[in-house]
Image (cartoon, rainbow, N blue to C red; front, top):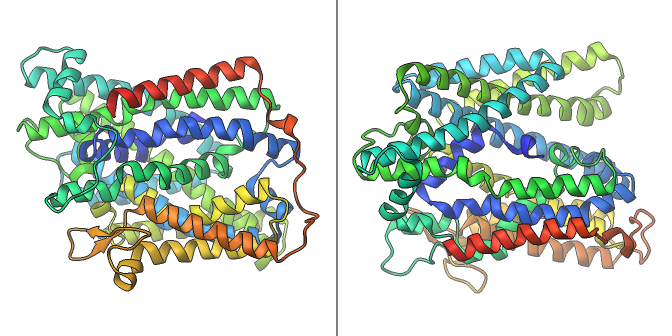
Length: 505
């Protein structure tokens, strides 16, 4: 599970948000640990009890083929225009920063071409590169964190000591070690407002952060398939252990960004190529020449592996869930392989075209925030559809279609239109200046509003349907009981999270 979650864009993007926000971005990892507890205790038993092993199977079994088709189309657009473009952009920015700048488009094309070669080699090659990516990123992340902290220690005259370097970070940037970003006031600077728009303090914890994590860990084929092949106890133990490991992830994905901020603020990092998303590679520039070359090669391999894995998912979804069912109903392997390879090529070309001059504004948002925000256009409807489908027997297929479509439309409305049509201050939300002449609602709050209204729409539509839905899942209380060892792991994880929030509140 952790290996499936680790990717080059996560390291580069979260380091960028560490540079900008500080430790607040660790909430994505620490709340993920709680989300994994919820998935282990309540979601996985439902899937296993009803013999659900893939997410398309869930959609077809609980609802109908139409819901599965709509979701396949949504996932295709999301993977191409959000995930693939972000990986390509963040990868090019990071390697461009390491090589001294001026090569952004050359690097972009190189990454795309390498990823195409790997993807066209088939799933076996992609699987091998996935293993390489995880090993490179974990080892490289630990090394980068150590380098970042020792460089800070050296530059601020406390010696080449990682612990001393960490203490310097806390002294030089105390605001970067606060989990809760304060709500803007009339005297707040645009920088303070922008931070709140990216992660709106306490409001995040009653809205978007839960939807992001529960949707990702509980309703995502790429993730849940890692657990659904096991028996219930094994699946639960594996998921909870993954949740425990998530507590450690901020050490290697966030601290380098905070270190880059302190170095930049102190004048020890004169050039930050690519804005905040260049923070990760900026720290690596302190490496000796030979190791710097090795880090360029390692980071390139990890980014290419991430691109290849994502474009392979795009190919699989289009070929199996769309083409073979609705365009040409065939089981001819040569035909499917040709269509799959054509899909890989088209997906990568589109990613390059939209990333070339940053047509989607990834650089303005920051790569990590861009992924979270625009995934959030789809996740409220998807999560509502899954949660009601699992735990409420009256939920109908028509309500699911209405939910996933209305969730998307509501997300577009709250993110792009609501301040202009309803005003900047209503009982539902407050919109803030975005620094570009307009006003925005924090996207976490948009996700919460979209999810709430989508749930209401689905419940009302289902109440108009039959009281007994033949497609409803069978549930019993015994499914949700946990063993004593499982309970101990849950309690330990929650206590550590509580201690972290007390320390950095």
